[in-house]
Length: 80
Image 1 (cartoon, rainbow, N blue to C red):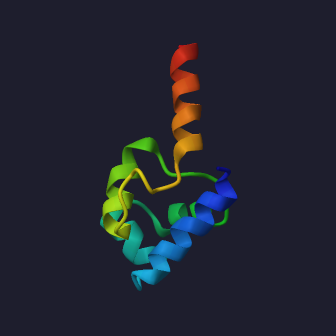
Image 2: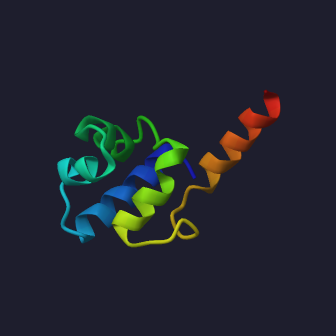
């Protein structure tokens, strides 16, 4: 999954929970600018935020479509 698809998914879930970007950011102790970047496909959440994001948005990490990020992280770890 690419950053744009991930961002749309996060945005849709956030809006369905009636949360603003600022609300989500406050719950994650990050800036609303970071959430905005995710939702515009300019970046993706840090892997340490996956479980908290899933919990806040009411999905499990299994359903949170982050498989491409996990694959990227695995690839990076294998290079180290």
